[in-house]
Length: 396
Ligand code: PMP
Image 1 (tube, rainbow, N blue to C red):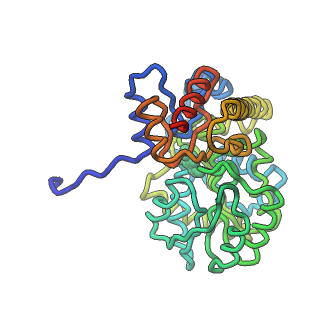
Image 2 (image 1 turned 90 degrees about the vertical axis):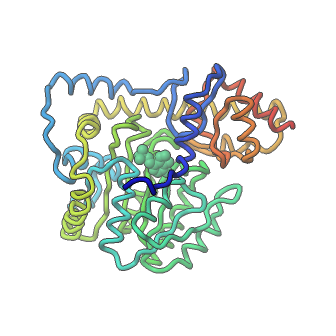
Image 3 (image 1 turned 120 degrees about the vertical axis):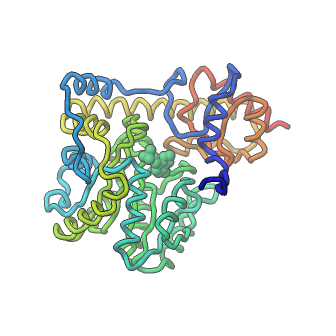
């Protein structure tokens, strides 16, 4: 029954990661996948996570199934963190939030929810955007359109014009902060204008919040656009991930929150989401929700976590400054200013596919073919090698 099935090409980013892992060079540098690495290039498990895991292990907790929509302690705390504990949506029980399989899972459920419940199935994505957005929404058969986002900097006038011309009641994906791949976000003033247009056109924002905390080092500040949408009573969908800011990538832990007009609406949406989840994966895994739930219900642990998150963000910022300083000192071709003006995990360099290929083949430096550099992989040990390699590649 399987003989007619053809093999598909591998996913380019995971494939590049595998090539990096198989590479024998002692100088190899991985700047492809958006996973944070510490000063020694190793994956980082946060201290606060290690301590909570020790405590959880000592409690011999059961392995019973969670409810279909996950652990209420987790998703209620995650929503408080996202909207602020004083949010009227929380007080008036007008937010439908559920546990989901990290950011990707939240977006995937969003696609299915739109397919199942919305008359309007048009969704606008920024151009460019995270490579997985289009495949995720394609799975739900949505009509995909793009809006202008980047043109060597934020294309603000293009963005506003495209939203002005968007079909009323459509869905629009926004990166709440640390835009992937461009590292370029609207300012607070620009967000105000964007959300004004969103409200005028009755558009529904879908906030992808994979990197809250990674832009400014402050979770609340990075949640500005979401909180502004809530303040302005704009019905919104928010896919919140704990992969990056708590370093919980493989736990697949996230929260999907939907801001509704009434409590009844929120309850109805919950029942629809449960009907989508049950035949898809039944219910989510428990370990990540126990870790995050335990941290978020304890103000001391929240402070510890936020301090560690700030450290990750500061280390990336320091690397941005150093790379910029060194490339400028060497008078390396092209403008590198963006390395310090961009924020979050990525810099959208103007290295071409050809440069990226040489970096990989000659220098064992792995960068995505678009020239997107994952800044989390740079450290004091590899920075000189990286800078001199980029310099040489651009000389020729
Ligand atoms: N959105 C964006 C913009 C991302 O960059 C990523 C991760 N690369 C995700 C969502 C999904 O991450 P996760 O599923 O691990 O939360």
